[in-house]
Length: 320
Length: 262
Ligand SMILES: Cc1cc2nc3c(=O)[nH]c(=O)nc-3n(C[C@H](O)[C@H](O)[C@H](O)COP(=O)(O)OP(=O)(O)OC[C@H]3O[C@@H](n4cnc5c(N)ncnc54)[C@H](O)[C@@H]3O)c2cc1C
Ligand SMILES: Cc1cc2nc3c(=O)[nH]c(=O)nc-3n(C[C@H](O)[C@H](O)[C@H](O)COP(=O)(O)OP(=O)(O)OC[C@H]3O[C@@H](n4cnc5c(N)ncnc54)[C@H](O)[C@@H]3O)c2cc1C
Image (cartoon, rainbow over all chains, first blue to last red; front, side):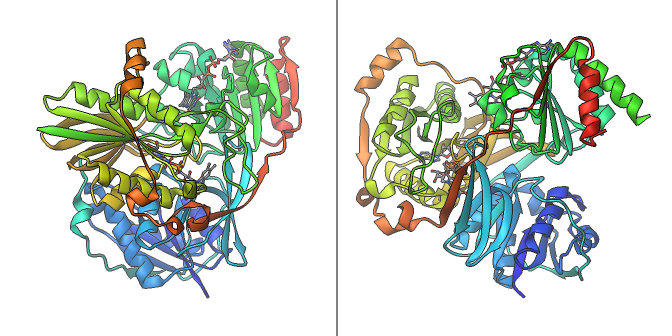
């Protein structure tokens, strides 16, 4: 059967959820062969096998951490040569997209970025994209080469499916180009203990209406009661109330959770670009004319400092 | 010493307008006003700052690949302070995808001559965020991308890249391709003097033959990808909106419980 390469996003062997979603999508078009690179790569095999990887190609080298992007491109290029896949699927993180793009160019293929769904078509995989701030849905195909497709988090429900997951060492020889951009220092982001923003099932976001860094505790308390991630609008981030890594929108993260709760956010087009594909949208805003209300499944016109704490209490009570 | 910077800027339909696809499933450019992609203003700004902080002789060229109107985007960048502009324009470019765009940009950058390419983090229409990496691959030079801070000194470019899991400090020798995020620093507004001066700055026009590119390599026909359908997202059915009269939080909890979120 046709094989599909799946690029594994992992941190020291811990596979991130979007990769498991990719394995689910990959099975619609063929047999998934996973490629895991860098420190801890071999440790990914068990979970990849549980999610349908028939083979796991691994390569560990310091080069992946010490140099930007290109070592990963060269490893994937080697994997494509070894496997001759019918498609290459990559998670839509900022770095993985760059890896995918350069790979596409090297193997003479087209690239589709930020797919939100994938199905088998008559002449290869058909990718769905949600474009122009999610106001249009397009379906596209790659017409030259081996389709390279990057897929956004939360594009599919993870479905386990046991497979062999045979670990094989991938042979990679780095060119001089791989060492062009040195990573001279790295500071890991501190964990908040909350779910990862792009992967969370529920996201609770605050905007300019939160009116101060200290007030974000109101948003955090609601998030914690629901087991949610915390997001912020650019206005809140620019004001220094919340870190940029939590920004939702065109120049922040794009999220697609089951539930998105926006408090004190007006709903500017650039914010909508990052959350409009959420399944259920709820907003709390004191301005009944705020554009965010055009998007909501449920909206409360009111002061967030009244509504949000009451909601948090009620959630806690109901959860017992 | 001299430093030649090429800033790539895209002309895009205004995101606050009613963006649409044309019958051939390319972006309908007649329906909505175009402008310089806001995220490329940050690229122009960083190029200007590199120039201002440099002892070298710095020349900043802004480059766009786009239709006739794309000259507006170049004028805006010139009025911010860039020195000259190159417009790659050709009817055969209509419908070019990211791989094709990177080919045209790379050929134009090579023809212009460069030590540093500065790009935006993503366009505001396609938003792929891959063109800078593609251009670096084509030019065979290092990519130092998605920087929130950038500095050039003694033939080396360095910067900070804030990723998902970590913040990284990067370094590469010139020539190189850089892309900058909207965290890199507010872009300046063109001054009246800048706007007047821009009118006199040179804008060169190149077509595919100037770059030695065949029509089949680009455009809709030459694209590596094909859009098969584009449908407007159905308007969301009007949601329930309640006014808080003291019970708003409880009503919302009731709704969330009904949807099985609690
Ligand atoms: C190139 C570019 C990229 C951008 N990228 C992003 C992005 O990634 N993400 C993003 O979010 N924005 C982005 N923006 C900015 C965007 O245009 C808006 O400025 C921003 O989203 C506004 O944030 P906000 O909704 O929090 O603030 P505002 O628009 O000021 O809205 C605040 C809202 O809070 C309400 N409010 C105030 N007090 C209360 C209260 N006590 N209770 C309830 N409601 C209250 C007000 O009624 C108002 O509706 C970008 C802009 C540009 C030009
Ligand atoms: C909604 C939509 C979806 C698309 N999806 C795909 C897709 O999946 N695959 C694909 O191959 N193509 C796609 N395209 C086409 C693609 O957007 C264009 O070919 C575009 O020129 C390159 O991609 P981008 O705009 O996403 O640029 P990005 O990669 O987001 O741009 C990054 C930077 O590159 C520079 N740049 C990009 N284009 C130009 C230009 N024309 N002139 C000067 N500088 C430029 C700018 O500095 C910009 O900030 C899509 C287009 C649209 C409108």
